Length: 100
Image (cartoon, rainbow, N blue to C red; front, side):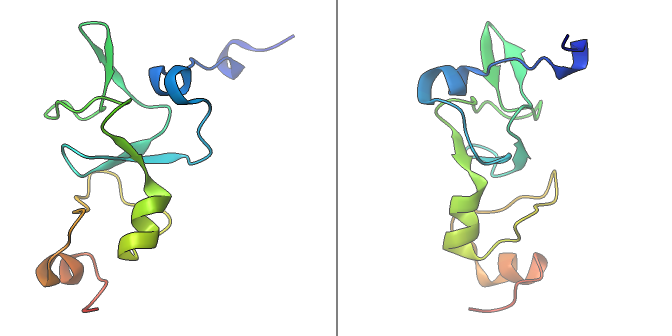
């Protein structure tokens, strides 16, 4: 018998694209990272879990590993940290990644 906490909610993203293999997503709107099973519901839509963001979890969520490949970001991100899609030299320094 499954315990209550073992049940997970299928996200709208999973319904649209199938189950994701990455545990982290990056939001195109706020450029922050969140766990794949985190979201808030607004007007019936699953939205980025950050209250000040208007991105949704279907269209605006990118797999974190793609940004790791592109920008050399850490495999395990810091929640709440902004990770720009196109980082400046200052961004890279702030994130401890140095110049490239």
